[in-house]
Length: 332
Image (cartoon, rainbow, N blue to C red; front, side, top):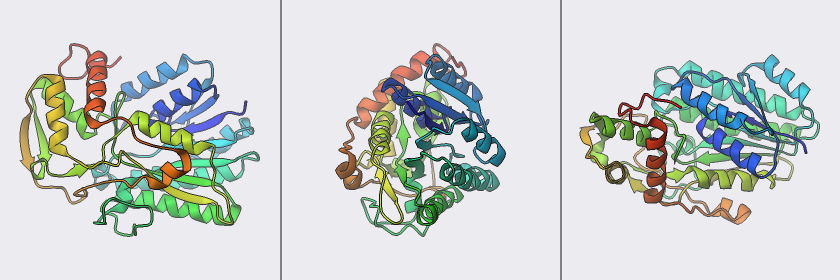
C-alpha cells in the first residue's frame, strides 16, 4: 500500500491523524522538526506512542528545508496522498516572533507545494489552514464564501497566504488540494499553550487564569476526534477541474463563551478558578462560528462531541498524563 506523507506528526492534530490513518491500515511517513515552541517532551511522548506501530516511520525534518524534503520524497516516490499539518502555531506568539511564522508557515508551505508537485503518483494534498483567516469578518457563521482579507494577526496572514499559494499551484500544475480551516481544536494530547490546557494546569495548581472581556469571547470549540473524522473524510475526495483546489471549514458549528469553558473545567477538575479579567488582545477575534454545510455535503461530516463531553475526556487524560504533579510538569 502506498504511504501517506504526514507533516506535523509530532503535533497535536498530526498525532491524532497519524493514529487514525494507522488504525485504518495505512502506512504513515511522519515528518516533524520537533521545535521547542512548547514542551518538547510532550511531542516526544506522542512520537513514542506512534513508534509502537510498524506502519509508522518518522523523519526529523523541517518542512522549510528544501533539500531535506527533496531527499525524503526521493526515498518515498510512491506517496499518493500528503497531509500537511506542520506549522508554527499560536496566534499571539506571532506578534513576538513573526519571522518564525513566515519561515514555517509560508516558506514551509511553499516547499510542500514544490515537493508535492514532484510526486509522480500524487492524488491529493490536504493542508491545514485556520479559522483565523476570517479575521475581522462579522458575518456569522463564518462561511467559505466570506471575504478573508482582514487578518488580525501575522499567524492569520500566513495561513491566508497558504491558501493563495495552494490556488496558484493548483492552477499552474493541476495539483489537487484541500485546505481545512480548523476551528479551536481541543482534546487529549493537546497543546499546552491553548486556553483550555493552560487553564486546567492553573486551576489544579491554584494559580490565576487570565480571561478576556469577562469571558464573553466566543469560540467554536471542536473536539479533535471530530477534526480527524473530517480530515480522513476529505482524503479520498480530491477536487477536480482546471484549478483543483478548495477550502473547507471544519468546526463544531456551535459558538460558546469562554466563560462556559472555564465553568466546565471547574466542574471536571473539582476546583474553582481564580479568574483575572483583562481586555481582549488586538490579535484575538471576538467570536468564531463555523458553517460546515460544504464539508458535510462532501464527506458526511457532522460534529458529534459536545464541549461538555470533550472537556470531560480531556480532563480524564490530563489527570492520567500529569499524575499527581499539580503543577503539570510531569510528562510521560
